[in-house]
Length: 282
Image 1 (cartoon, rainbow, N blue to C red):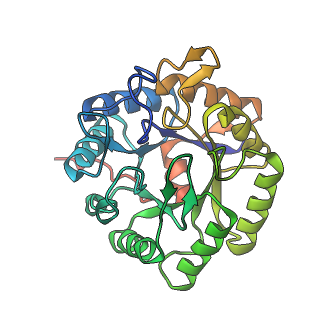
Image 2 (cartoon, rainbow, N blue to C red):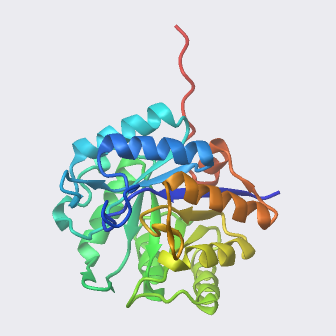
């Protein structure tokens, strides 16, 4: 059976406690929520950090605290930092990369979001890609528009990205890519044309999460993404109780499609992340 990675985006920069009390805000809450998701089957965690007032933060100390806690409580789990720009000073979006997480998100172009323009200027994108390369961090290329695939190709042509990137198609954000199955086929065909050896996943936002996951699994995705960043509900009338509950639904989807959950070792090998060093004996 094909091993499939479960990525859990634990909090993002938008959902608040008032939206769902399970959204983890403090580093301690994020570590605990990640551990629960890990025990449910997640092998990759996508991390945003927040200030105490729940606004987005770029504080490297908060990233470091979550990173250390996840490494301690979730052995082998791939740690991925967000460099996303919603509510963050552009000059600070890569400030935590010196902590050398396994992976970091990298958006390669600008796009309209519901109330803002998510701006990713070429100079900023190249700067962040260069830092990731220098620190040995694997990027996850965030695709909000077809042109962003060609932005990634330009990075590769400049030597800032290798030819086996991990690509995530983000579907269902208002004003960006609609969650339509035919569009996933177009995006995937173009991605494989530009990067024949890429790995890939797709994220469905809000009520689109489950159906986009199914579309991805039918097409042989290497990973699926879930978590409270993207979707705070199990059904229209019921909030998710935790990130772990959303992971449990992802596990069922993977098994329903005849696949199995990837181990941490398999996930690291598939995405090109370094294996976790074995503890040294005294």
